Length: 119
Image (cartoon, rainbow, N blue to C red; front, side):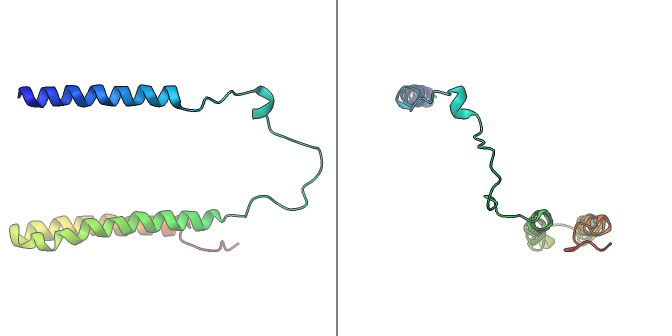
């Protein structure tokens, strides 16, 4: 126990020394009011500096990630069939899949899955 406490103490001291050195060595940025204010010359832009980004694409990507991660929760349930009662296994997995189906139906009803909006 003493070895663990001493090693924890030594590691804590080394970590604190390293953080202190980083703060001392790091580049200091002096925020001048003129440097951080936005530059405006008064002329209209010839072209947009930003590329247009579809919010609908972002929303579909997030929905895909959410439902894709759920697959990683379903896959380990298959080998667990051997360790529990089939009725309990079916109840848990049926409930989980029903929650996913209700979620996807809600997204569909809200129009989040539609790529183009129909008027």
